[in-house]
Image (cartoon, rainbow, N blue to C red; front, side, top):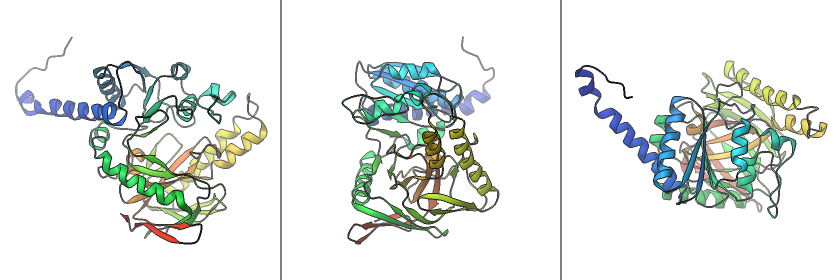
Length: 387
């Protein structure tokens, strides 16, 4: 039964707002299902979310947009999960049914896969093994997806209906430069000065072109990113934007910048006041999560030690490209801001430095120089401006 609001003054003053908001949300959802995923009639779509207003509202709009395109869609609602929690078994079993499309619209994270952690997934003839069914379906090119941890209603409506052709062109240009580079040198006015090895790595695109099996990324989209070479980064990073944390808070903008010293690809020290202490504690939580796995099925001492060690390893270098993104203190959006880059500490995207945490941290107005194997330098971003 619909609830009736008595009186006329309030109705007249706000009558247009619900309609405008619904229209913006519908456009964003249609863009996600149509332009980004290109959902087709008869495809199976699984949407995973939490019982919170923003993500549940977005999920309902995506469900409607999927039905409008003739898909067989379902919504699964589980309690909020952090990067250290396990996903509900029902969610994992739904993904194990191998849907065509997966949308994770979570207040925080999808959650770990307890089954995959005990016995990694394999999908021959695809090479590799995966500790999460989601990663397995993507890696074996059996599903396509987007995931939006911590997304808000305003963010979704504002940053999803963007020019994906422009973002894609910029992302492909960056990928070409990063794929050729042996190293990158990143500097910034805040004090960042670090070299990161990229030998043997290939860049990934979060450009909103997620319509082929095995493709996926964030919504909002808009970045090119790459996993640093193992154990190959030295210098100082000064995070003067937002930082991700593993204490349940998602991300925060510190009152003063957080300085991180890196040697041999690992974080060796963190300094800079209360924000630095909070970030350092998140690194410790990643290490602790690994120690807690000791003695469980599939967790030999070497694996426990590796996960704990990689909680301090550089796992990603990303460059933001979304022109509608702005500083919000929400990492999902902040890492996409055009004119910034971010470095993540923890698990990487090539699955050879696994950890329980992946903590993205923003550097404002960087200058990024790609260094080729022959020593030739190419400036790909100058003071936050694409070259």
